[in-house]
Image (tube, rainbow, N blue to C red):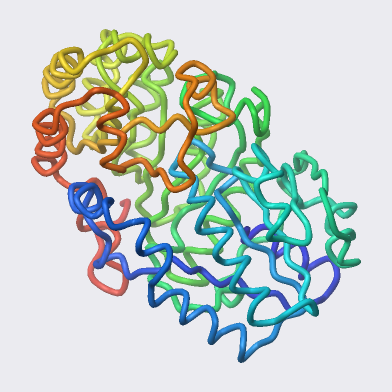
Length: 419
C-alpha cells in the first residue's frame, strides 16, 4: 500500500496520505497467547471499536476524492493477510460518510483471490499489484469495476517510502519492515503466493535496496530493520552480496531476516553476523510429519543443522511453528512439539494454520472459509481437532523463548549496533 501511495504521488503529483488503522506503539503489541485468548471477541470488535470512530472523524475532516483500502499485503502474502470483513467495514464507512462523490477501491491479497466478494461495497476492485502507470492512470481517472493489475517487474523504480506520507505518527518499530524481493519459488500448502504472484521471484538491485536501508537509517533513525523478504538468502550469492555491501558501506544497524533452513550454510551465517544481523527467522513449522502435510519440502535434519550453524555464529534463531494440517491428529502435534522444543530456538512463533481461499490447503480441506479467521483464531482448534491443552503447550513454548527483537527496537534509547 505504501509503495502504491508513493507511485501515485511521484507519477501524478497528487497529495496522497497513508492511514494505518492498526498502528500501535511497539510496547503495546499483544503477545501471541494474549491474541489467542482474545480471538473470541474479534467478530464483536469488527462491529464496534474506537478505530471506526477515528476513521469516520478523519474522513469528515479531510474529505478525500479517492480512497484505496488495503486488504492484505501482496508483498508478504504468507503473513496474516488481514481480514476481509474489516476491509468491507472500511468501505461501508467510507461511502456512508462521503457519499457517492468519493471513489473507493480495494486492493491486496483477498481482492486478488476473490474479487467478487467486494463488488457490492467498492466502486473498483484491483487484482494483483497496481504500481504500473497503466493501472495508476485508471485510478486517477476514477475508473470503476474490475481493474486487472500487473506484477511490478522493475522493483528499482519503486520510490523510497517516506515517513511524511503516514497520517498517524508511528513508532519507528512500525517503519522497520523493508523488502528487497517479491515472490517465492516454493509451493507450501498454506501460502497464497502461487495464486497471487506465481512461483517467480522478482529482485530489487542490491544497491537500490541498500540505498533505502541507508535512507531509513540516516533520515529517520531506524537503527534496526527487518529485511522481510520471504527468503532473503535465495539465491545465496545475492544474500552474500547484501551482507558484503552492508559491511563495505559501514552501515551501523541491526537487522534480521527470514530464511528457509536449506538456504543456511556456515559462510552465510558468518557474513550475516559480521554485517550486523541479530537473528534469523526459520519457517520450521513442525516435525517431518507436519512439514510433509503442509508441503514444506524440508527435513528435520536440515532444520537441526541450520539452527546449529546459526547459533554457532552467534545469531539468534526464531522458529516459526504451525498447529493444524490435513491428515494429522492431536497426537501428531504432541510429537511435533517435542521436536520443536529440542531445537532450543531463541524464540518460537506459534500460528494455527488458516486454510485461506486460493491456497492449495483450502482446496484440500474443502471447507467454507470464515471471513474473519486469523492465524491465532481459537475456532481453528476445532477445525484441526486439537485439544486446548495442546495449544496451551505450544503457547508456553512461545512464552519460554526470548522475544526475538527484545532490546533491539528500542529507538531513541541506547541500542547496540554493528561494529
